[in-house]
Structure formats: structure tokens, C-alpha cells
Length: 362
Image (tube, rainbow, N blue to C red; front, side, top):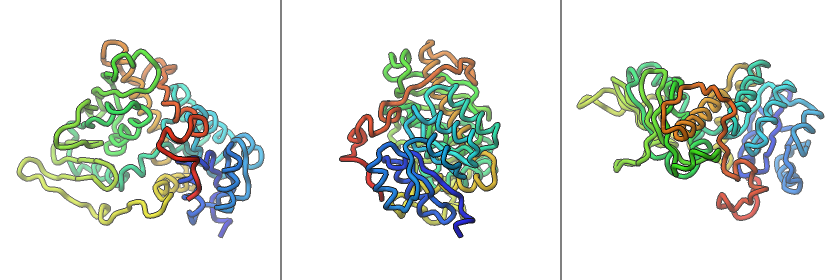
């Protein structure tokens, strides 16, 4: 029944990523998609008609002046995300989300997390939940001691290639948090090119990160001959290799006794079966947290922490690769995303991500 459903508004729901959320909420049995917010009015009308969305608005402020939905999903450029999340929290929504990276400046990320926590608003961020299948269950399995005490961790190449230690690296860095629940305590960083350390703009980076579990996580520059992995985690009783999607290998035992294992939760493939289905894990998490309260899985806190790691890598590189203790005292530090993430495709053009023409509904 409609009265049992959570009322949802999608902000920026007509963009390349936004259309995934619009589809997912429109097709979710626990959601009633009541509003679509987007400044692309002609395209917005097409989306609203396609999914039967009754209300349309130009801005978050217009939406909240009309009604306060239970859930607001903000799929906005990074420049607009902090104010949108805070406005929704202050208005009293039950759960709110944004995309990654959540902000450029650490102080803005702090405001987003603090405002939501002060008001007991569930706050979700990013895409980590759909980048690796069964991510939450894998983390619980590791934390239950199935590979023993963690002794080391590494990522090969993913932060040092491309130009986005924050914009892309935030997801990679969060895999370690999901798998171990450990926090970073210090960072030693290098940037590529070296002179990128002196600027605020996002860039490639690599380095060493000291974790609260007593081990070092190495974000390596090179990709080994054996192939890249998004996370390799080693314990004294086993290991984990995570490459993305369904490509996670779990090992129990060491040396000649090491054997791959497949826990029951990994049986079958939960790959994307519908055009917008990749957003469903995040949608499920936000709807669930809207009902029960507390931090959403893939939370704003998670993404604030990895934004700080990315910023600390640049601070360390700027200061001769010295060890930088976390949390950073200077909360004005920022990592400015690439123009597409900062401004959005309607400003930069959609061709920068290889799209011909504007996004269309699924």
C-alpha cells in the first residue's frame, strides 16, 4: 500500500548517475517517488512522465518549501552537495544521500556529518556498495576472524593511475574500511606528477597508511605482473583479494595449507540485471536506515574519513612526504574534484565521460 511506502525525492535525477537512482526508486516496492528535482527542465519533464512522478522542482529549497519527503537522494555535482545535504537534514528528512566525493573541503564534510548526526538523520554517500558484490557480508566475515589477525593490506595501481585520488580513490579506500572497520591513523603520501602536491586539484597519488589495527596499508604505484586488485588483505590465518564486481577470492590457511573458500553468502551472482539496477544496494541501504535510524551503510562518515586520507596524501607530498597524523588539524584543506564532478555534465558537457548527447531515462 502506498501509505506503507517511504516518500522519496531524487535531486539531480536526470543526469548520467541520477537516472540510475530515479529508475531504482521508481521500481522499488518500498518507495513512492513523489518528486524530481533538476534544473534541466525539458529533460526533467521526460523523466517525470516516464516514471509517473507527480511533482517537479528546480532546487532543493523549492522541494523542501513544498514538502519534506522521508528520503532525499542528492545526485548532484560536488559543488552543490554539502548545502543540499545540510538543508535536507535541517528540514527533518529521515535519510539523505549524496554522491562521491562528498565535498572538496574537509570542513564541509564535517558539517555534513555533524548536522546529520545531531539530528539523528541517516546519511549515505557514494557507490562502494555496488562496486563489489556482497561487500557488507565480506566485511562481516573478515571481522569475525576468518583470516585471523590482519597483518598487512595493499592496493596496486588504482590510486596512482588516472587523476583522482579523491574522486575515484575514495571508493577504493573505503573497501578497506568495510573489510576491517579500522581507521587510518597516519599517512605518508606522494603525488603524480610531483608538482600536483602544491595545488588543490585532485590528482593521482600513492603512499603508506597506518591503520588502527596495527598494520600498514600500502597504496602502491605499480601494478604487479599477477594483475591489479582493488584490495589485498592478509591475515595470519588467510587472505582476501578483491578485484571488483563478483571478483573476490577468500583464502583460509597459510602456506601449503591455504585453500580458497566460498561462504554461503557468495553463492550465485547478484550482478546488474536491469538498466538502473546497480543503484539498488545503495537504495536498499538508505530506505532501511530511514526506517530504523542510525548511520546508513556506506555512510557520510565513511566518505569523510577517506576524503581526509586523500587530502593527507597531498599534504604529506607537499611537505616532503613526511608522516601526517590523523585527524588533520587544518580542516580547511581541500581536494578539488575534476570539472565534471565539480560542475556536472550539463555544465562541462557529457562528452567528457564518453556520452553522446544528454542522458535519457532507462
